[in-house]
Image (cartoon, rainbow, N blue to C red; front, top):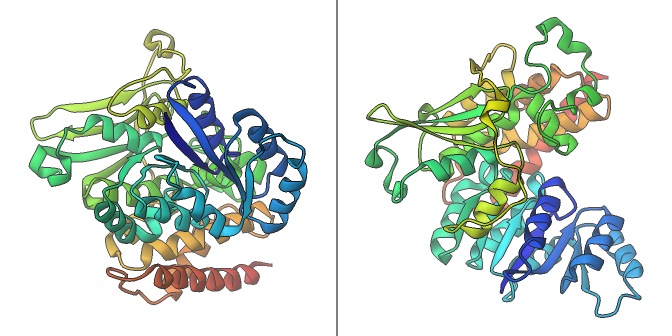
Length: 394
């Protein structure tokens, strides 16, 4: 029986993970569930899956959860705070850790899982964007396994040959092609973007996601973060990564080889597919996802990503090429900008503007060989600067 901890179990990835796990009770046992502030949903999940531990990132929410579960026979041990998250990520009873906490908050527990030698199912791209060198070093030192959950990176992983860790050119790979749906504003004229509302930005045409990642998809920052993530996961440079708009979201990503071959992974847009792949790898198991019907799909369209309409993608490529502290600053500034947009303090086109101004205002700093505290300090200072710049917009 494989013990599974789900970091961020009340979000869309966490819910999908528990759906897949529930289909294979003979194979998986839920050891721990965690959430940020959704006490009611986590309590409901505890009653269904009977974990040994339940963690709320917020201490006050942890107290409310303990009260809700107080009468539950054999109920979980309730913990709170980042220390609780790190504890359940490194439990001896846990072999697999789904890292699905959104944003920089997921970095510490993800690192704890990596340092403990777990199979890390990585859905928290910010861990690699902020601290790629640190996380990859922890994976190598502990012998942990790192399997990507983002549908694009999971698709690439499936299309690469064994031994790609020697370097993509060594296994004949020319480049990686990351597909992007283009979000809800792909066909909007640029002049309309100034009037975009948070609800419009969160109404993704294909995927159902949380509000922050939905906005990132609308700006294409999500794809930019995935470019940085791909460089770390597959040991390549941003010049070997191309973003292609594919509105149907049926081809999840592609790998182009030296001999002219292009391999693609296709499937219905459902996160249970990459989750099931990572849970079972190198085997395959049933995920609950309907088979893909290409006749019903009818056509597959592709177009170039327009960096003039989606400047966030260009900023991410630039940060990837610059390296050092630039990706961490990019991520921190984007989180502040998206929060400002969702709160009505920032216009949609100003998200990229605020990120760019933060990048320009933060001196570039080397991070290779740095500590977690160094990276968190960069993140903190970038957020302070972005927050002060945000205050100038109203």
